[in-house]
Image 1: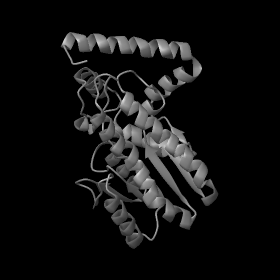
Image 2 (image 1 turned 90 degrees about the horizontal axis):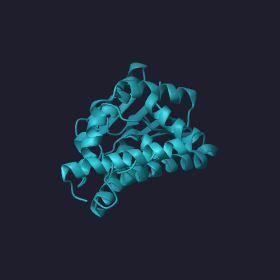
Image 3 (image 1 turned 120 degrees about the vertical axis):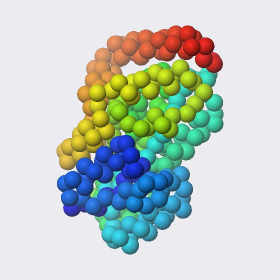
Length: 256
């Protein structure tokens, strides 16, 4: 039995991960802004300190930290403004950074544990119109790899999850001036054949194998495989998607 803290666990992938861990007998502390076992705003240092204190009192240690909470955003380079960049960076990148800063001392003291950072396929594959989202998710991938190297001497492993689009309430958090991009992303999420529960099951399988990078769905595996295996074809596909996004935005009369 493992002791696990999951952020953003009131809904979506966080809830699915919590349920999957619990189904196999693990103890899970669900944290979220509302609706969790413990209130945790991942942008608050005080909330992270309270989470550490709660874990110490409840369990005396932690086996798995799952940095799952995040928001959706993006926009073409000349449309998204700097406030959007600051907003998504503060939550999607610095939320994970704060989680590591809070719990790494505990993991190092006990000389064991796993860190699971939920990034996105956007951390590995970078479509047009999503520069801010791509950039912060790529940073989470780099953060995870760095943590894995740095903490290996302490018996701590780090894993990053990079799913493609799957059905979730993440789009409820979508904000930004680029309405053309927003409509495309919403459609991709709504039409995805993959559920949060399927992603969660694949994440647990990846963790059991010890995978450092977990591509939990066929679409993610195919897209990353194309980038690695045939860069010319990958670039052509991405640039074709960029042209289609511009065409859609122009037909809608969106701001540029």
